[in-house]
Length: 514
Image 1: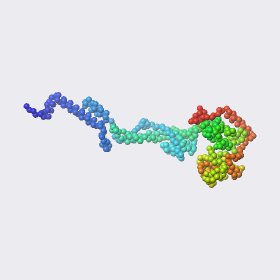
Image 2 (image 1 turned 120 degrees about the horizontal axis):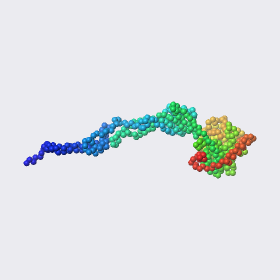
Image 3 (image 1 turned 90 degrees about the vertical axis):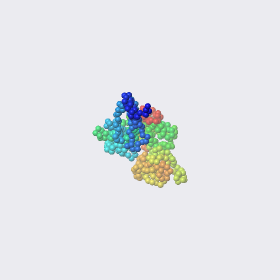
Image 4 (image 1 turned 90 degrees about the horizontal axis):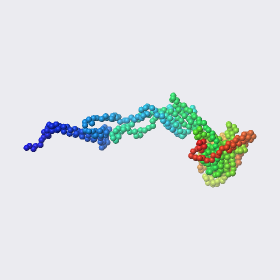
């Protein structure tokens, strides 16, 4: 008996000599081929452990969805048919497009800009991206209805314009899963302005200006003037603290309060004569836009003040429209004195007339005037009409102005920061005209106004001196004035007294119109 092992060749011969053996060999070979293919594909879906050193060394991996399809196949060769392949970018740049680009239609946008100090409208428009051609054309059109030199810093303008979308080339980078994506970080930018359409702004409450391009591309400007409506008000206030703040809390407009202070400034020292509990009443008209926005003050027709048992009442009278109006008491006596007691608004007395310790010289001496503590640059008014006698530097007075009012009366103003335009020796001024601005020049410890009244070159106390009063109406003029005064009294009696604001967070005038 031969115990030698059969050779591989004889074994293969015996297997292939039978039909079952041949089919078993074919089946085993196909199974091994499919298993090897799947193993190879699995290795291709695994990312490399280290990043590629260069673009050329990067490996393009088999998409995972394709691998899943192959791994889940039944093993038939038909399942290995190639799938449609996605087209890969041939360049490392991706071009983004928006719907507006695809439609090739411009975009209409709006924006608000503000003029800076020292800027011009044309410059502000160019800074916003408007072309110099459009900016200059729009400003030229504006000049036909409004002087652009009157524009001030802070004025807002509403712009309407077209933007033309542009494609943006963005570098492509590889994502974590091997896909090529566009790097959009930091590429967002506002689309450039292609064409200015219109500009709208309101230089005042009464005016709305619009600059627009017509169908032919030419700019035109329109100024729409709002029709203002006058409303009459009768307001009364009990003073708590200062008159000004009490009036503000009652909703009386600031310009009305200032006008009333001017009316009584010849008789009332608003720092020393006003006490808590005093009252005043004012009858005035005010103008509003059609939508109820306050626009500007009208006229104070009547005002009365009750000060510790003393009552002062004044009525407005203007017989000649070409002459300024004046205020008179019930008997036709003008409220104006020859000289004002207080030539600055909002002043408080910091040093009166008399002996005092001089803060700089260090000894007691006569203070021959009144010091009003006011901020630097406060307008200083002429206490009366007259001629500028001096306007120069004068030792301890610093910058100094003296006005000759005639009949031996003079007023002097010291420690000024500067003079008003046109003020020089020999120039004529009227009562209430701004002649200078307060400061702290000369022998001064802080900004204030030193004010003197001189009679025949001798300083007198401005707070106690009696000066000549204004004119007194008589004859026909007095009769006409009395008729108007009685008519004003009848209007006042027929109106309710407004004493308090319902909501101080909104304007009183708007609340009343509603």
